[in-house]
Image (cartoon, rainbow over all chains, first blue to last red; front, side):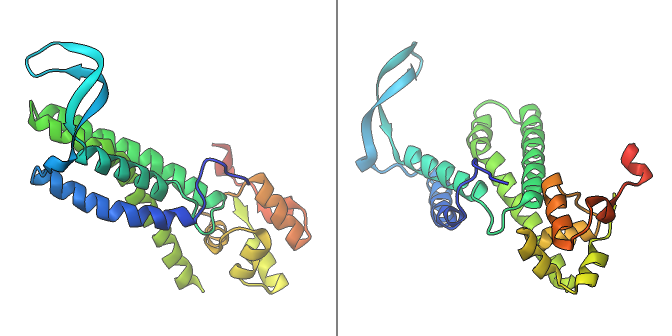
Length: 158
Length: 68
């Protein structure tokens, strides 16, 4: 069966090599609010809301682009890790992939629902930041856990 | 659904790994099918039948629970 919505297997390793360092650096800069002045730039924006000001579309804002760079790296590398083919991607693996994806969506929204009800105001900003990445993260954890469980079972059988 | 993959494999005297290579799937898939954890697609069923040189219906049999 030809699957054309998955990346070739080798991209999984590349994905991990980018994801792990950028996730570590991303978390660290987020926690310590590290924003080096050298990365302050005037950048184009499609929607702007000034502090205590009006909202408007299209313009230029001054922004520290470190979090944008790290965010893009984490998202793209997570996609590579999540959606690169396994070494032996066959129909059974595809089924596990689908199950893990559905599970990840349920789990992610369960956590988001709980957060909605129990976390408020500015603290909710943290939920929104993490929620951008968690659906892929939960999928990656669940899928790889299922695959490794599968490989262990086969070792016992033979 | 029941299947006799293990029996057919024994007749041909091939391992799960051999069958996996012949059917172009992973060993885990063969294992999961033998344990009844995975029902293969029509294409894979036909491939298995061709490898074992039998009819598909000789490998796979419906059970009552398949009608639920």
